[in-house]
Amino acid sequence: MVSLERRPLVIGHRGASGYRPEHTASAYRLACEMGVDFVEPDIVATRDGVLVVRHENEISGTTDVADRAEFIDRRTTKSVDGEQLTGWFTEDFTWAELATLGSRERLPRVRPENTRFDGAEGILRLRDVFAIVDEQSAALGREIGVVVEVKHAQFYEDRGIDLVEMLCVELAGSGWADRPERLVVESFELGVLNRLRAAGVRAEFVFLAERFGSPADEPVGDAPPRSYSWYRSDAGLDFLATRVDGISVAKANLLRIGVLGQALGPTNLVERAHARGLRVFTWTLRPENRFLNLVFRGSAAAEQWGDWNAEFAMIASSGVDGVFVDHPDLGVAIRDDAVA
Image (cartoon, rainbow, N blue to C red; front, side, top):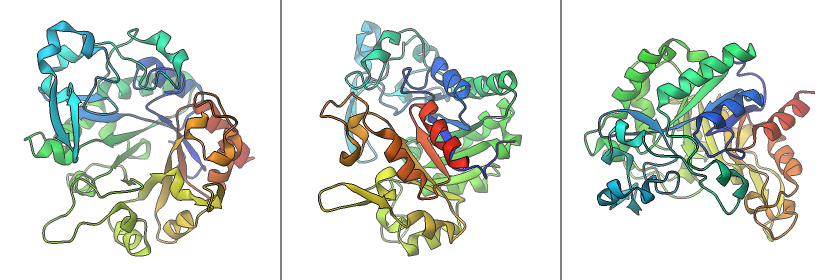
């Protein structure tokens, strides 16, 4: 059983995506070998009803689809959760077609070393991630969990694609329907989490909250649209406490920021959420200067590493229950130091 009491839990964000192209088999295996408690796949759908793991349903930035002449006519423009995107979308492909594509590094300018793996591995299905985690748990002699992020549920539902039904089938078929102690399901949309719980899915449910904007499934009925910032308020946390087990926020929401933009220490968000029985997770801890608060940056070079240890430690001091990391070994170092 994965210990949900250890803090902070280390969650391999799309595997070990700091060292390999995200959502690849080698990224997930490396994350497990580096000591994560959980790995996190994002799920989107194919045209023929297969759940695949990709950062988004638009895949031109994470695969070689743009170089494939046979798929040039699939390029299109869609509005996804209020954003106009042009590219290639998983729901316009069958699984057999997607299986022919090669994965690519999503952040080549920040992580040029990872580009040497471009094209070496293909796209995974959710069932493949479950199988890798089972394999690694057995090989390493410890149970590793999975945090499944449901992407664009309302977008898909509007097009007659039911991610709830698909996920229920996948959990049952993979044997993960009976592993609630190792399964977390999260989404930026509360509606899909409510539906999954109502469908009998046994898992810990976590509501993701962006820094700005509102969920794609708001407003619900005649209720006014509720912003992500409202969900982080006392009233919003009271509301969430009756519906989910936890909340996951951008790391900036756990840092008090000074007038010059420098991090001064943790906010009280974790304390307020814990008072309501909610766990708190945060994303995404990364060592590169581009992603660090300015007080921790070592130089102006975006790809170089700054004082990641100090930023990670400040976030851990908030009492956060889990951290999403691209470099699992760094998260494990902070976790183990906090435990010690």
